[in-house]
Image 1: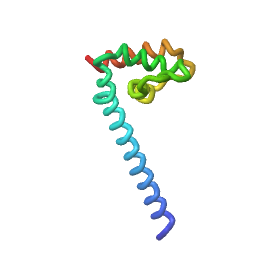
Image 2: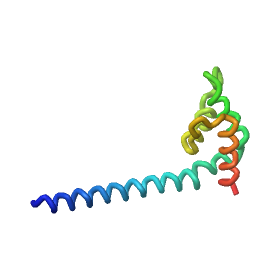
Image 3: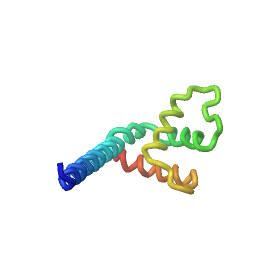
Image 4: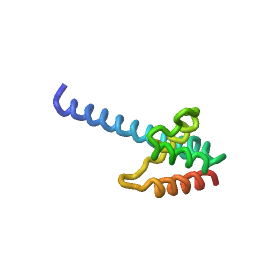
Length: 103
């Protein structure tokens, strides 16, 4: 196969991989917006209080059940904290995102 044909196949593979990644990331963002974040609509303040503990305490659950803290910590991955963002600013931004998602 001539070099030109190999480059075309390589470029086609690159484009296909890029499109696949775009679709996967768009689907993940849709899932987070439509399914994951609305789960926090029931008691957003309690969830944010638990997340505040996760962000500020070395052992937030200590001798209590860790499940509520793990559920709250998922928000940290759904809506990441910006570089240098204060905890209170981050929690306010999360609160706003939850409120918008619950409408």
